[in-house]
Image 1 (tube, rainbow over the protein chains, first blue to last red):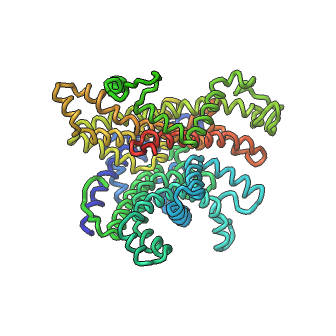
Image 2 (tube, rainbow over the protein chains, first blue to last red):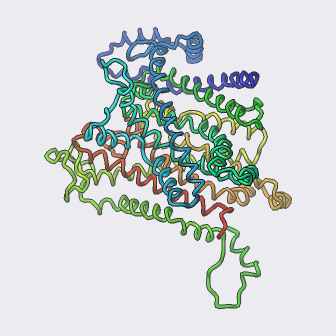
Image 3 (spheres, rainbow over the protein chains, first blue to last red):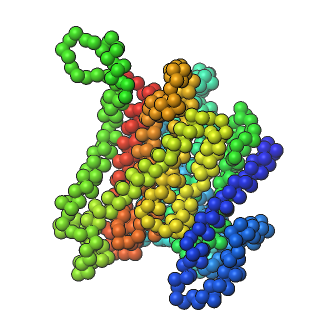
Length: 322
Length: 303
Protein backbone atom coordinates (compact mmCIF):
# COMPACT_ATOMS: atom_id res chain seq x y z
CA UNK A 1 0.00 0.00 0.00
CA UNK A 2 2.65 2.53 1.02
CA UNK A 3 4.83 2.11 -2.09
CA UNK A 4 1.68 2.49 -4.16
CA UNK A 5 0.79 5.73 -2.45
CA UNK A 6 4.29 7.10 -2.82
CA UNK A 7 4.36 6.24 -6.51
CA UNK A 8 0.99 7.84 -7.06
CA UNK A 9 2.05 11.01 -5.29
CA UNK A 10 5.21 11.09 -7.39
CA UNK A 11 3.06 10.85 -10.52
CA UNK A 12 1.09 13.84 -9.29
CA UNK A 13 4.17 16.08 -9.58
CA UNK A 14 4.31 16.25 -13.40
CA UNK A 15 0.57 16.75 -13.42
CA UNK A 16 0.77 19.71 -11.06
CA UNK A 17 3.60 21.13 -13.15
CA UNK A 18 1.43 20.85 -16.26
CA UNK A 19 -1.51 22.52 -14.52
CA UNK A 20 0.65 25.38 -13.27
CA UNK A 21 2.32 25.83 -16.67
CA UNK A 22 -0.99 25.96 -18.51
CA UNK A 23 -2.48 28.44 -16.02
CA UNK A 24 0.69 30.53 -16.19
CA UNK A 25 0.58 30.67 -19.98
CA UNK A 26 -3.12 31.62 -19.98
CA UNK A 27 -2.54 34.47 -17.56
CA UNK A 28 0.47 35.79 -19.45
CA UNK A 29 -1.21 35.47 -22.84
CA UNK A 30 -3.58 38.37 -22.22
CA UNK A 31 -2.81 41.19 -24.63
CA UNK A 32 -0.84 43.67 -22.53
CA UNK A 33 0.22 41.11 -19.94
CA UNK A 34 -1.23 40.33 -16.53
CA UNK A 35 -1.28 44.00 -15.55
CA UNK A 36 -3.37 44.98 -18.60
CA UNK A 37 -6.31 46.28 -16.59
CA UNK A 38 -4.12 48.71 -14.67
CA UNK A 39 -3.00 50.26 -17.96
CA UNK A 40 -6.48 51.65 -18.65
CA UNK A 41 -6.79 53.03 -15.16
CA UNK A 42 -6.06 56.78 -15.19
CA UNK A 43 -5.15 56.69 -11.50
CA UNK A 44 -2.20 54.39 -12.13
CA UNK A 45 0.82 56.29 -13.37
CA UNK A 46 3.11 54.81 -15.99
CA UNK A 47 6.13 54.85 -13.65
CA UNK A 48 4.19 53.02 -10.94
CA UNK A 49 3.26 50.42 -13.48
CA UNK A 50 6.87 50.04 -14.55
CA UNK A 51 7.95 49.70 -10.92
CA UNK A 52 5.28 47.04 -10.33
CA UNK A 53 6.40 45.19 -13.45
CA UNK A 54 9.99 45.32 -12.27
CA UNK A 55 9.02 44.10 -8.82
CA UNK A 56 6.94 41.21 -10.15
CA UNK A 57 9.60 40.35 -12.72
CA UNK A 58 7.14 40.78 -15.57
CA UNK A 59 9.69 42.38 -17.89
CA UNK A 60 11.75 39.22 -18.14
CA UNK A 61 11.32 36.46 -20.72
CA UNK A 62 8.44 34.06 -20.02
CA UNK A 63 10.42 30.88 -19.31
CA UNK A 64 12.54 32.78 -16.79
CA UNK A 65 9.41 34.16 -15.14
CA UNK A 66 7.92 30.72 -14.87
CA UNK A 67 11.16 29.40 -13.41
CA UNK A 68 11.20 32.13 -10.80
CA UNK A 69 7.52 31.57 -9.99
CA UNK A 70 8.12 27.83 -9.62
CA UNK A 71 11.15 28.29 -7.37
CA UNK A 72 9.27 30.69 -5.11
CA UNK A 73 6.21 28.48 -5.10
CA UNK A 74 8.14 25.40 -4.01
CA UNK A 75 9.82 27.33 -1.22
CA UNK A 76 6.45 28.49 0.07
CA UNK A 77 6.51 32.02 -1.32
CA UNK A 78 3.31 32.14 -3.35
CA UNK A 79 3.49 35.87 -3.87
CA UNK A 80 1.20 38.67 -2.73
CA UNK A 81 -2.30 39.50 -3.81
CA UNK A 82 -2.31 42.40 -6.26
CA UNK A 83 -5.54 43.65 -4.71
CA UNK A 84 -4.84 43.44 -0.98
CA UNK A 85 -1.07 43.00 -0.83
CA UNK A 86 -1.43 40.10 1.59
CA UNK A 87 0.50 36.85 1.12
CA UNK A 88 -1.44 34.39 -1.02
CA UNK A 89 -0.71 31.46 1.32
CA UNK A 90 -2.28 33.33 4.21
CA UNK A 91 -5.40 34.19 2.21
CA UNK A 92 -5.89 30.65 0.93
CA UNK A 93 -5.16 29.15 4.33
CA UNK A 94 -7.93 31.19 5.93
CA UNK A 95 -10.54 30.13 3.40
CA UNK A 96 -9.60 26.54 2.78
CA UNK A 97 -11.01 25.46 6.14
CA UNK A 98 -14.24 27.37 5.54
CA UNK A 99 -14.65 25.59 2.23
CA UNK A 100 -13.98 22.20 3.82
CA UNK A 101 -16.45 23.01 6.56
CA UNK A 102 -19.17 23.77 4.00
CA UNK A 103 -18.35 20.89 1.64
CA UNK A 104 -17.96 18.38 4.45
CA UNK A 105 -21.29 19.18 6.08
CA UNK A 106 -23.03 19.14 2.71
CA UNK A 107 -21.41 15.82 1.89
CA UNK A 108 -22.59 14.25 5.14
CA UNK A 109 -26.15 15.43 4.57
CA UNK A 110 -25.99 14.17 0.97
CA UNK A 111 -25.07 10.67 2.15
CA UNK A 112 -27.68 10.74 4.91
CA UNK A 113 -30.32 11.42 2.26
CA UNK A 114 -28.94 9.41 -0.65
CA UNK A 115 -28.35 6.07 1.07
CA UNK A 116 -31.83 5.57 2.59
CA UNK A 117 -33.50 6.86 -0.59
CA UNK A 118 -31.40 4.56 -2.76
CA UNK A 119 -32.01 1.50 -0.57
CA UNK A 120 -35.76 2.11 -0.40
CA UNK A 121 -35.94 2.66 -4.16
CA UNK A 122 -34.17 -0.62 -4.78
CA UNK A 123 -36.30 -2.56 -2.31
CA UNK A 124 -39.48 -1.16 -3.82
CA UNK A 125 -38.40 -1.07 -7.45
CA UNK A 126 -40.91 0.59 -9.82
CA UNK A 127 -43.06 1.74 -6.90
CA UNK A 128 -44.40 5.26 -6.54
CA UNK A 129 -41.55 6.00 -4.14
CA UNK A 130 -38.99 4.82 -6.68
CA UNK A 131 -40.62 6.97 -9.33
CA UNK A 132 -40.61 10.05 -7.08
CA UNK A 133 -36.99 9.43 -6.17
CA UNK A 134 -36.07 9.43 -9.87
CA UNK A 135 -37.95 12.68 -10.34
CA UNK A 136 -36.14 14.13 -7.31
CA UNK A 137 -32.77 13.27 -8.83
CA UNK A 138 -33.72 14.87 -12.16
CA UNK A 139 -34.88 18.01 -10.38
CA UNK A 140 -31.67 18.08 -8.35
CA UNK A 141 -29.22 18.08 -11.20
CA UNK A 142 -31.28 20.11 -13.66
CA UNK A 143 -31.85 23.09 -11.42
CA UNK A 144 -29.31 25.92 -11.59
CA UNK A 145 -28.00 25.84 -8.05
CA UNK A 146 -27.30 29.60 -7.91
CA UNK A 147 -30.90 30.40 -8.91
CA UNK A 148 -32.30 28.02 -6.31
CA UNK A 149 -30.00 29.73 -3.81
CA UNK A 150 -31.39 33.16 -4.68
CA UNK A 151 -34.97 31.86 -4.42
CA UNK A 152 -34.18 30.27 -1.05
CA UNK A 153 -32.79 33.60 0.16
CA UNK A 154 -35.94 35.43 -0.95
CA UNK A 155 -38.26 32.93 0.74
CA UNK A 156 -36.44 31.73 3.85
CA UNK A 157 -34.21 34.68 4.67
CA UNK A 158 -36.11 37.75 3.51
CA UNK A 159 -39.78 36.79 3.66
CA UNK A 160 -39.81 34.32 6.55
CA UNK A 161 -36.64 35.46 8.26
CA UNK A 162 -35.79 31.95 9.43
CA UNK A 163 -32.19 31.88 8.29
CA UNK A 164 -29.55 34.49 7.50
CA UNK A 165 -29.14 35.41 3.82
CA UNK A 166 -25.39 35.01 3.71
CA UNK A 167 -22.11 34.75 5.53
CA UNK A 168 -20.79 32.11 7.89
CA UNK A 169 -21.53 33.46 11.34
CA UNK A 170 -22.88 36.55 13.06
CA UNK A 171 -20.01 39.02 13.23
CA UNK A 172 -19.20 40.11 16.76
CA UNK A 173 -20.98 37.22 18.41
CA UNK A 174 -18.86 34.74 20.42
CA UNK A 175 -18.79 31.20 19.03
CA UNK A 176 -22.13 29.51 19.30
CA UNK A 177 -23.16 26.25 17.66
CA UNK A 178 -26.74 27.28 16.94
CA UNK A 179 -25.53 30.45 15.27
CA UNK A 180 -23.15 28.47 13.07
CA UNK A 181 -25.87 25.97 12.19
CA UNK A 182 -28.33 28.67 11.22
CA UNK A 183 -25.87 29.95 8.64
CA UNK A 184 -25.24 26.44 7.35
CA UNK A 185 -28.84 25.35 6.75
CA UNK A 186 -29.57 27.03 3.42
CA UNK A 187 -26.31 26.44 1.53
CA UNK A 188 -25.90 22.90 2.83
CA UNK A 189 -29.44 21.79 2.02
CA UNK A 190 -29.09 23.19 -1.49
CA UNK A 191 -25.87 21.32 -2.10
CA UNK A 192 -27.37 18.11 -0.71
CA UNK A 193 -30.47 18.54 -2.86
CA UNK A 194 -28.22 18.95 -5.88
CA UNK A 195 -26.23 15.72 -5.40
CA UNK A 196 -28.35 13.44 -3.18
CA UNK A 197 -30.67 12.46 -6.01
CA UNK A 198 -27.82 11.37 -8.26
CA UNK A 199 -26.03 9.45 -5.51
CA UNK A 200 -29.26 7.70 -4.55
CA UNK A 201 -29.53 6.44 -8.16
CA UNK A 202 -26.12 4.83 -7.83
CA UNK A 203 -26.99 3.28 -4.47
CA UNK A 204 -30.20 1.95 -6.02
CA UNK A 205 -28.58 0.26 -9.01
CA UNK A 206 -25.76 -1.09 -6.91
CA UNK A 207 -28.25 -2.51 -4.38
CA UNK A 208 -30.25 -4.14 -7.19
CA UNK A 209 -27.09 -5.80 -8.41
CA UNK A 210 -25.98 -7.05 -5.00
CA UNK A 211 -29.41 -8.36 -4.03
CA UNK A 212 -29.22 -10.93 -6.84
CA UNK A 213 -26.02 -12.48 -5.51
CA UNK A 214 -26.04 -16.02 -4.18
CA UNK A 215 -24.91 -15.06 -0.70
CA UNK A 216 -28.03 -12.93 -0.28
CA UNK A 217 -30.19 -15.90 -1.23
CA UNK A 218 -28.21 -17.94 1.30
CA UNK A 219 -28.80 -15.38 4.01
CA UNK A 220 -32.50 -15.38 3.25
CA UNK A 221 -32.58 -19.19 3.16
CA UNK A 222 -31.02 -19.25 6.63
CA UNK A 223 -34.17 -17.51 7.76
CA UNK A 224 -32.66 -14.11 8.56
CA UNK A 225 -35.04 -11.21 8.80
CA UNK A 226 -35.26 -9.21 5.57
CA UNK A 227 -34.16 -6.10 7.43
CA UNK A 228 -30.92 -7.77 8.51
CA UNK A 229 -30.31 -9.20 5.05
CA UNK A 230 -30.69 -5.79 3.47
CA UNK A 231 -28.87 -3.67 6.03
CA UNK A 232 -26.09 -6.05 7.14
CA UNK A 233 -25.42 -8.18 4.11
CA UNK A 234 -26.48 -6.25 1.04
CA UNK A 235 -25.93 -2.59 1.92
CA UNK A 236 -22.32 -3.03 3.00
CA UNK A 237 -21.28 -4.32 -0.37
CA UNK A 238 -23.60 -2.09 -2.30
CA UNK A 239 -21.96 1.02 -0.85
CA UNK A 240 -18.46 0.18 -2.09
CA UNK A 241 -18.99 1.50 -5.64
CA UNK A 242 -20.21 4.77 -4.14
CA UNK A 243 -16.60 5.56 -3.21
CA UNK A 244 -15.68 5.70 -6.89
CA UNK A 245 -18.75 7.73 -7.75
CA UNK A 246 -17.89 10.32 -5.12
CA UNK A 247 -14.27 10.49 -6.25
CA UNK A 248 -15.34 11.03 -9.86
CA UNK A 249 -17.87 13.63 -8.78
CA UNK A 250 -15.34 15.62 -6.77
CA UNK A 251 -14.38 18.17 -9.46
CA UNK A 252 -18.08 18.94 -10.00
CA UNK A 253 -18.46 19.25 -6.23
CA UNK A 254 -15.75 21.92 -6.13
CA UNK A 255 -17.45 23.80 -8.98
CA UNK A 256 -20.82 23.62 -7.23
CA UNK A 257 -19.29 24.83 -3.98
CA UNK A 258 -17.86 27.87 -5.78
CA UNK A 259 -21.35 28.87 -6.93
CA UNK A 260 -22.92 28.30 -3.53
CA UNK A 261 -20.17 30.28 -1.81
CA UNK A 262 -20.76 33.14 -4.23
CA UNK A 263 -24.54 33.19 -3.70
CA UNK A 264 -24.33 32.97 0.09
CA UNK A 265 -21.27 35.23 0.50
CA UNK A 266 -19.50 32.31 2.20
CA UNK A 267 -15.88 33.27 2.94
CA UNK A 268 -14.41 30.25 1.17
CA UNK A 269 -11.86 29.49 -1.50
CA UNK A 270 -14.34 29.43 -4.39
CA UNK A 271 -15.63 32.90 -3.67
CA UNK A 272 -12.08 34.18 -3.27
CA UNK A 273 -11.23 32.66 -6.65
CA UNK A 274 -14.18 34.35 -8.32
CA UNK A 275 -13.43 37.76 -6.81
CA UNK A 276 -9.78 37.45 -7.73
CA UNK A 277 -10.73 36.56 -11.31
CA UNK A 278 -12.84 39.72 -11.60
CA UNK A 279 -9.82 41.74 -10.40
CA UNK A 280 -7.23 39.84 -12.47
CA UNK A 281 -5.45 39.08 -9.22
CA UNK A 282 -3.33 36.40 -10.80
CA UNK A 283 -1.05 35.36 -7.90
CA UNK A 284 -4.16 34.39 -5.93
CA UNK A 285 -5.65 32.58 -8.94
CA UNK A 286 -2.47 30.58 -9.49
CA UNK A 287 -2.37 29.57 -5.84
CA UNK A 288 -6.00 28.42 -5.75
CA UNK A 289 -5.71 26.53 -9.05
CA UNK A 290 -2.77 24.53 -7.74
CA UNK A 291 -4.37 23.90 -4.34
CA UNK A 292 -7.56 22.69 -6.02
CA UNK A 293 -5.67 20.38 -8.37
CA UNK A 294 -3.68 19.00 -5.44
CA UNK A 295 -6.85 18.42 -3.42
CA UNK A 296 -8.53 16.54 -6.26
CA UNK A 297 -5.45 14.32 -6.64
CA UNK A 298 -5.25 13.67 -2.90
CA UNK A 299 -8.94 12.83 -2.59
CA UNK A 300 -8.73 10.50 -5.57
CA UNK A 301 -5.82 8.71 -3.95
CA UNK A 302 -7.78 8.53 -0.71
CA UNK A 303 -10.73 7.02 -2.57
CA UNK A 304 -8.52 4.33 -4.12
CA UNK A 305 -6.96 3.47 -0.77
CA UNK A 306 -10.38 3.32 0.89
CA UNK A 307 -11.62 1.10 -1.90
CA UNK A 308 -8.75 -1.32 -1.38
CA UNK A 309 -9.38 -1.31 2.37
CA UNK A 310 -13.05 -2.19 2.13
CA UNK A 311 -12.83 -4.53 -0.86
CA UNK A 312 -10.17 -7.22 -0.36
CA UNK A 313 -10.47 -8.26 -4.02
CA UNK A 314 -8.84 -5.01 -5.09
CA UNK A 315 -5.07 -4.83 -5.26
CA UNK A 316 -3.44 -1.49 -5.79
CA UNK A 317 -1.00 -1.32 -8.68
CA UNK A 318 0.50 2.01 -9.63
CA UNK A 319 -0.53 2.73 -13.17
CA UNK A 320 -1.65 5.80 -15.03
CA UNK A 321 -1.55 9.44 -14.13
CA UNK A 322 -3.79 9.34 -11.08
CA UNK B 1 -27.67 3.79 -44.24
CA UNK B 2 -27.66 0.14 -45.22
CA UNK B 3 -30.90 -0.72 -43.45
CA UNK B 4 -33.11 -0.67 -46.54
CA UNK B 5 -30.85 -3.16 -48.24
CA UNK B 6 -30.90 -5.49 -45.28
CA UNK B 7 -34.67 -5.55 -44.90
CA UNK B 8 -35.35 -6.09 -48.58
CA UNK B 9 -33.05 -9.11 -48.71
CA UNK B 10 -34.66 -10.48 -45.58
CA UNK B 11 -37.24 -13.10 -46.59
CA UNK B 12 -39.46 -12.43 -43.61
CA UNK B 13 -40.02 -8.92 -44.90
CA UNK B 14 -41.90 -10.30 -47.89
CA UNK B 15 -45.49 -10.78 -46.90
CA UNK B 16 -48.52 -11.86 -48.88
CA UNK B 17 -50.99 -9.80 -46.90
CA UNK B 18 -52.02 -6.29 -47.80
CA UNK B 19 -48.86 -4.29 -48.43
CA UNK B 20 -48.27 -1.72 -45.73
CA UNK B 21 -45.22 0.50 -45.93
CA UNK B 22 -44.09 -0.30 -42.39
CA UNK B 23 -40.63 -1.68 -42.37
CA UNK B 24 -38.67 -2.58 -39.30
CA UNK B 25 -35.36 -0.83 -38.71
CA UNK B 26 -33.22 -0.08 -35.66
CA UNK B 27 -34.14 3.59 -35.99
CA UNK B 28 -37.83 2.82 -36.03
CA UNK B 29 -37.58 0.50 -33.06
CA UNK B 30 -35.70 3.20 -31.16
CA UNK B 31 -38.42 5.69 -32.00
CA UNK B 32 -41.08 3.28 -30.74
CA UNK B 33 -39.21 2.87 -27.46
CA UNK B 34 -38.71 6.63 -27.14
CA UNK B 35 -42.43 7.20 -27.71
CA UNK B 36 -43.24 5.05 -24.72
CA UNK B 37 -41.03 7.13 -22.40
CA UNK B 38 -43.59 9.53 -20.94
CA UNK B 39 -41.14 11.95 -19.35
CA UNK B 40 -39.21 12.17 -22.60
CA UNK B 41 -42.39 13.06 -24.46
CA UNK B 42 -43.21 15.68 -21.84
CA UNK B 43 -39.67 17.05 -22.19
CA UNK B 44 -39.97 17.20 -25.97
CA UNK B 45 -43.28 19.02 -25.64
CA UNK B 46 -41.88 21.62 -23.23
CA UNK B 47 -38.75 22.13 -25.29
CA UNK B 48 -40.75 22.36 -28.52
CA UNK B 49 -43.02 25.00 -27.06
CA UNK B 50 -40.12 27.06 -25.73
CA UNK B 51 -38.26 26.79 -29.05
CA UNK B 52 -41.35 27.95 -30.92
CA UNK B 53 -41.71 30.95 -28.60
CA UNK B 54 -38.03 31.87 -29.03
CA UNK B 55 -38.05 31.49 -32.81
CA UNK B 56 -41.24 33.51 -33.25
CA UNK B 57 -40.31 36.02 -30.56
CA UNK B 58 -40.94 39.13 -32.72
CA UNK B 59 -44.51 37.95 -33.29
CA UNK B 60 -45.06 36.79 -29.71
CA UNK B 61 -44.12 40.09 -28.11
CA UNK B 62 -44.41 43.66 -29.30
CA UNK B 63 -41.59 45.04 -27.16
CA UNK B 64 -37.94 45.66 -27.98
CA UNK B 65 -35.78 43.64 -25.54
CA UNK B 66 -33.45 46.59 -24.95
CA UNK B 67 -36.00 49.43 -25.01
CA UNK B 68 -35.87 51.21 -21.65
CA UNK B 69 -38.91 52.80 -20.13
CA UNK B 70 -37.78 54.44 -16.94
CA UNK B 71 -41.34 55.36 -15.97
CA UNK B 72 -42.15 51.64 -15.88
CA UNK B 73 -39.31 50.41 -13.68
CA UNK B 74 -39.71 47.22 -11.61
CA UNK B 75 -43.41 46.76 -12.23
CA UNK B 76 -44.81 43.41 -11.08
CA UNK B 77 -46.31 40.98 -13.63
CA UNK B 78 -49.44 42.37 -15.27
CA UNK B 79 -51.39 41.93 -18.50
CA UNK B 80 -49.10 44.30 -20.42
CA UNK B 81 -45.97 42.74 -18.90
CA UNK B 82 -46.69 39.06 -18.11
CA UNK B 83 -43.34 38.68 -16.32
CA UNK B 84 -43.08 42.25 -15.06
CA UNK B 85 -40.39 44.81 -15.90
CA UNK B 86 -36.76 45.08 -14.79
CA UNK B 87 -34.68 47.85 -13.23
CA UNK B 88 -34.59 49.82 -16.51
CA UNK B 89 -38.26 49.31 -17.31
CA UNK B 90 -37.58 46.66 -19.95
CA UNK B 91 -40.16 43.92 -20.47
CA UNK B 92 -38.84 40.79 -18.73
CA UNK B 93 -40.86 38.40 -20.92
CA UNK B 94 -39.37 39.93 -24.08
CA UNK B 95 -35.88 39.77 -22.66
CA UNK B 96 -36.47 36.13 -21.69
CA UNK B 97 -37.42 35.32 -25.28
CA UNK B 98 -34.50 37.13 -26.91
CA UNK B 99 -32.07 36.11 -24.18
CA UNK B 100 -33.21 32.52 -24.56
CA UNK B 101 -32.15 32.60 -28.19
CA UNK B 102 -28.61 33.43 -27.11
CA UNK B 103 -28.58 30.93 -24.22
CA UNK B 104 -29.82 28.09 -26.41
CA UNK B 105 -27.57 29.02 -29.32
CA UNK B 106 -24.57 28.97 -26.97
CA UNK B 107 -25.70 25.59 -25.62
CA UNK B 108 -26.05 24.10 -29.09
CA UNK B 109 -22.83 25.59 -30.43
CA UNK B 110 -20.81 24.48 -27.39
CA UNK B 111 -22.28 20.99 -27.81
CA UNK B 112 -21.24 21.01 -31.47
CA UNK B 113 -17.69 21.88 -30.41
CA UNK B 114 -17.53 19.23 -27.68
CA UNK B 115 -19.06 16.50 -29.87
CA UNK B 116 -16.76 17.29 -32.80
CA UNK B 117 -13.62 17.32 -30.69
CA UNK B 118 -14.74 14.31 -28.66
CA UNK B 119 -15.65 12.23 -31.70
CA UNK B 120 -12.43 13.10 -33.46
CA UNK B 121 -10.16 12.32 -30.52
CA UNK B 122 -12.17 9.27 -29.47
CA UNK B 123 -12.10 7.91 -33.02
CA UNK B 124 -8.35 8.40 -33.37
CA UNK B 125 -7.84 6.83 -29.96
CA UNK B 126 -10.07 3.81 -30.57
CA UNK B 127 -9.09 3.18 -34.17
CA UNK B 128 -5.34 3.40 -33.91
CA UNK B 129 -4.78 2.30 -30.32
CA UNK B 130 -1.20 2.06 -29.06
CA UNK B 131 0.64 5.11 -27.75
CA UNK B 132 -1.76 7.53 -29.48
CA UNK B 133 -4.58 5.99 -27.51
CA UNK B 134 -2.62 6.16 -24.26
CA UNK B 135 -1.70 9.80 -24.82
CA UNK B 136 -5.27 10.88 -25.61
CA UNK B 137 -6.76 8.94 -22.72
CA UNK B 138 -4.25 10.45 -20.28
CA UNK B 139 -5.25 13.88 -21.53
CA UNK B 140 -8.89 12.96 -20.89
CA UNK B 141 -8.01 11.89 -17.35
CA UNK B 142 -6.26 15.18 -16.66
CA UNK B 143 -9.03 17.42 -18.02
CA UNK B 144 -11.76 15.40 -16.32
CA UNK B 145 -10.04 15.58 -12.96
CA UNK B 146 -10.01 19.35 -12.87
CA UNK B 147 -12.98 21.40 -11.60
CA UNK B 148 -14.01 22.96 -14.91
CA UNK B 149 -15.72 26.01 -13.44
CA UNK B 150 -12.38 27.23 -12.06
CA UNK B 151 -10.74 26.98 -15.48
CA UNK B 152 -13.78 28.56 -17.15
CA UNK B 153 -13.71 31.53 -14.80
CA UNK B 154 -10.00 32.01 -15.34
CA UNK B 155 -10.23 31.68 -19.13
CA UNK B 156 -13.29 33.91 -19.41
CA UNK B 157 -11.77 36.63 -17.27
CA UNK B 158 -8.41 36.62 -19.03
CA UNK B 159 -9.45 35.92 -22.62
CA UNK B 160 -12.50 38.16 -22.48
CA UNK B 161 -16.04 37.03 -22.99
CA UNK B 162 -17.16 37.36 -26.57
CA UNK B 163 -19.77 34.87 -27.76
CA UNK B 164 -17.10 32.94 -29.64
CA UNK B 165 -14.70 32.56 -26.70
CA UNK B 166 -17.57 31.51 -24.40
CA UNK B 167 -18.68 28.81 -26.85
CA UNK B 168 -15.14 27.57 -27.45
CA UNK B 169 -14.19 27.57 -23.80
CA UNK B 170 -17.32 25.68 -22.71
CA UNK B 171 -17.07 23.22 -25.60
CA UNK B 172 -13.36 22.57 -25.16
CA UNK B 173 -13.85 21.63 -21.51
CA UNK B 174 -16.69 19.19 -22.18
CA UNK B 175 -15.54 16.81 -24.94
CA UNK B 176 -14.19 14.06 -22.68
CA UNK B 177 -17.35 12.00 -22.22
CA UNK B 178 -17.96 11.77 -25.98
CA UNK B 179 -14.32 10.86 -26.58
CA UNK B 180 -14.55 8.01 -24.08
CA UNK B 181 -17.84 6.75 -25.56
CA UNK B 182 -16.59 6.81 -29.16
CA UNK B 183 -13.37 5.10 -28.17
CA UNK B 184 -15.22 2.40 -26.24
CA UNK B 185 -17.57 1.62 -29.10
CA UNK B 186 -14.65 1.51 -31.55
CA UNK B 187 -12.80 -0.94 -29.32
CA UNK B 188 -15.93 -3.05 -29.00
CA UNK B 189 -16.38 -3.71 -32.71
CA UNK B 190 -12.72 -3.78 -33.67
CA UNK B 191 -12.46 -7.55 -33.49
CA UNK B 192 -15.78 -8.32 -35.21
CA UNK B 193 -15.68 -10.47 -38.32
CA UNK B 194 -17.40 -7.97 -40.55
CA UNK B 195 -14.77 -5.37 -39.74
CA UNK B 196 -12.00 -7.85 -40.53
CA UNK B 197 -13.86 -8.73 -43.74
CA UNK B 198 -14.13 -5.08 -44.69
CA UNK B 199 -10.41 -4.68 -44.06
CA UNK B 200 -9.65 -7.76 -46.17
CA UNK B 201 -11.50 -6.49 -49.20
CA UNK B 202 -9.27 -3.44 -48.99
CA UNK B 203 -11.45 -0.78 -47.38
CA UNK B 204 -9.50 2.35 -46.50
CA UNK B 205 -9.35 3.50 -42.85
CA UNK B 206 -11.51 6.45 -43.89
CA UNK B 207 -14.19 4.15 -45.26
CA UNK B 208 -13.92 1.82 -42.25
CA UNK B 209 -14.34 4.67 -39.78
CA UNK B 210 -17.15 6.43 -41.59
CA UNK B 211 -19.19 3.41 -42.68
CA UNK B 212 -18.57 0.80 -40.00
CA UNK B 213 -17.17 2.32 -36.83
CA UNK B 214 -18.96 5.65 -36.45
CA UNK B 215 -22.54 4.43 -37.08
CA UNK B 216 -21.99 1.99 -34.26
CA UNK B 217 -21.14 4.83 -31.88
CA UNK B 218 -24.07 6.97 -32.96
CA UNK B 219 -26.55 6.01 -30.21
CA UNK B 220 -24.43 6.80 -27.14
CA UNK B 221 -23.04 9.93 -28.80
CA UNK B 222 -26.53 11.29 -29.48
CA UNK B 223 -27.46 10.70 -25.84
CA UNK B 224 -24.28 12.39 -24.60
CA UNK B 225 -24.76 15.28 -27.04
CA UNK B 226 -28.28 15.88 -25.74
CA UNK B 227 -27.13 16.04 -22.15
CA UNK B 228 -24.16 18.21 -23.20
CA UNK B 229 -26.59 20.86 -24.45
CA UNK B 230 -28.25 21.18 -21.07
CA UNK B 231 -24.88 21.11 -19.30
CA UNK B 232 -23.58 23.87 -21.59
CA UNK B 233 -26.68 26.01 -20.99
CA UNK B 234 -26.20 25.60 -17.22
CA UNK B 235 -22.50 26.42 -17.51
CA UNK B 236 -23.13 29.51 -19.61
CA UNK B 237 -25.77 30.74 -17.19
CA UNK B 238 -23.39 30.18 -14.27
CA UNK B 239 -20.65 32.15 -16.03
CA UNK B 240 -23.04 34.98 -16.91
CA UNK B 241 -24.38 34.97 -13.37
CA UNK B 242 -20.80 35.37 -12.15
CA UNK B 243 -20.41 38.34 -14.48
CA UNK B 244 -17.99 36.59 -16.83
CA UNK B 245 -20.38 35.63 -19.61
CA UNK B 246 -21.87 37.53 -22.51
CA UNK B 247 -21.71 41.24 -21.74
CA UNK B 248 -24.66 43.69 -21.58
CA UNK B 249 -26.87 44.90 -23.17
CA UNK B 250 -27.18 41.43 -24.75
CA UNK B 251 -29.41 39.43 -22.43
CA UNK B 252 -28.93 35.79 -21.61
CA UNK B 253 -30.85 34.03 -18.88
CA UNK B 254 -27.76 33.94 -16.68
CA UNK B 255 -26.94 37.64 -17.05
CA UNK B 256 -30.57 38.60 -16.37
CA UNK B 257 -30.26 36.74 -13.06
CA UNK B 258 -27.07 38.60 -12.26
CA UNK B 259 -28.65 42.01 -12.63
CA UNK B 260 -31.88 40.92 -10.97
CA UNK B 261 -29.91 40.03 -7.85
CA UNK B 262 -29.57 43.64 -6.75
CA UNK B 263 -33.32 44.17 -6.42
CA UNK B 264 -34.49 40.60 -6.02
CA UNK B 265 -36.11 41.20 -2.66
CA UNK B 266 -38.23 44.11 -3.88
CA UNK B 267 -38.81 42.68 -7.38
CA UNK B 268 -38.47 38.89 -7.08
CA UNK B 269 -40.04 38.30 -10.51
CA UNK B 270 -36.93 39.70 -12.21
CA UNK B 271 -34.91 36.88 -10.63
CA UNK B 272 -37.53 34.13 -10.70
CA UNK B 273 -38.34 33.90 -14.40
CA UNK B 274 -34.86 33.75 -15.99
CA UNK B 275 -33.73 31.01 -13.59
CA UNK B 276 -36.97 29.13 -14.00
CA UNK B 277 -36.46 29.09 -17.78
CA UNK B 278 -32.94 27.69 -17.36
CA UNK B 279 -34.39 25.02 -15.09
CA UNK B 280 -37.25 24.21 -17.48
CA UNK B 281 -35.04 23.86 -20.54
CA UNK B 282 -32.42 21.90 -18.63
CA UNK B 283 -34.86 19.38 -17.15
CA UNK B 284 -36.70 19.00 -20.48
CA UNK B 285 -33.43 18.19 -22.26
CA UNK B 286 -32.39 15.79 -19.51
CA UNK B 287 -35.71 13.93 -19.81
CA UNK B 288 -35.24 13.69 -23.56
CA UNK B 289 -31.72 12.39 -23.00
CA UNK B 290 -33.05 9.75 -20.62
CA UNK B 291 -35.65 8.69 -23.19
CA UNK B 292 -32.99 8.49 -25.89
CA UNK B 293 -30.78 6.40 -23.63
CA UNK B 294 -33.56 3.85 -23.19
CA UNK B 295 -34.37 4.01 -26.89
CA UNK B 296 -30.82 3.33 -28.02
CA UNK B 297 -29.96 0.76 -25.39
CA UNK B 298 -29.92 -2.56 -27.25
CA UNK B 299 -30.39 -4.45 -24.00
CA UNK B 300 -33.71 -2.72 -23.53
CA UNK B 301 -35.74 -5.12 -25.66
CA UNK B 302 -39.47 -4.92 -26.08
CA UNK B 303 -41.20 -6.69 -23.28
